Image (cartoon, rainbow, N blue to C red; front, side, top):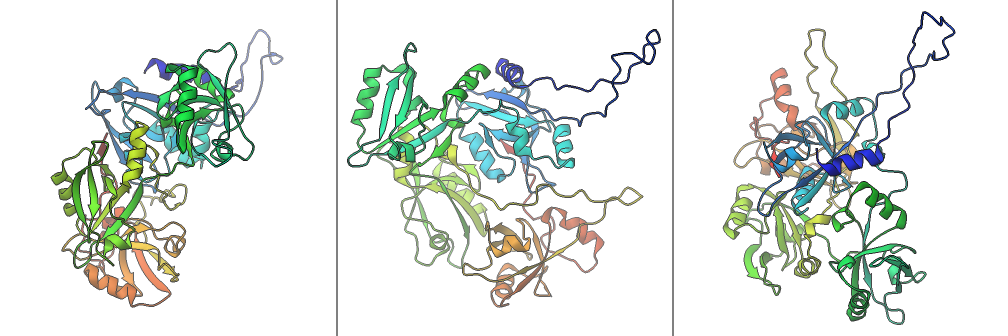
Length: 506
């Protein structure tokens, strides 16, 4: 366990007021004043902070998997001996609640992996042991509240704010030195001015400006920097109380911890399903003005899957299927896309956006946060038979009513194999409301069995079936169990549903 880990625990975790147990002193008899009868308090759960440090070119030394039994959760499956993860106290079975103070238990697994990869040389993980996590699940605890309760009350995360100058009022911000505290400044935004609308609050402490820590520059240099900014300024700030708490806990105040306000560029995710002519784009390796080599999307065909997914000419590929590829070889990226079969997920950003993050000396994936549909908080444990065997999983009938944007889901399949599954469900869509989940395997479309049908035929049945659309589905991870209990099921996928417990080494 690292020293910083101990500091956070000692500063923020207080021993609970445990109820006294029944004690009997034969000399004092039943009137023992220490005697108190009370019910046991509910057992508590104890998050741990693990601070991982790595060298350039090395990993952190652990494998992270999606919790296969639920629609949320990320589990440490393996910790490399002598690694940064082992030295930080990370253990097999730990569930990751936060990555760099960002709650991730309900986020897509690929999103969490990208956040870890983008964190740089230092990574902060808030975790729960396997035992504590299972207890929290069984008790229906709100894990977001569990994570937040680890910090002192009133502690807020830093804010990364992007301020745009406006005619007549400029940035709408005053930077005032704090008397008796060299190198420290408080901010005073103009009411309803650009700075206040960008998230700056009166009395905020200035930590960092345009990628430079103010602790290493003089007030004269700071004033010159602000004056020279043409149209925009990006600052890292925190309120005074939270600054004191961070200092007391021995934690740095860094952009990786920040909530973002008004950032002009964000990575975006493109989900592409291959058409008869492919995906409809070219991937080229080009050199940017900054000198950085980038893999850029070009020549997007009209009405192609790429254009339909929202791809724009000139976007840079940051990740393929949730794996960071910016520094990968061009041929390797092309190979990853081809090996994806009929579906691929690309994380991209515009060239201007990449230049913006380059100037700030940070990865654009640091603030990547793809929204995922909200599932039920936890899967209900299956009841067991007296013999100890679990009840087999049951198919679900989902009825979808077509809306302006369609049914709100994408299909996937294994190349050249019969059988289809749900590849993606759009948040807030009729598909989500009907109960469709990612990785569900399709059994019937409007009463017709499609287990032995190929992808194109299933698409034809869905698009030509009108509305409402009735889909009989079953959870992909449990499909083999169901197949073994129903003689009528004979799905060609047979273990080809993408493995939701696949490990990612980070």
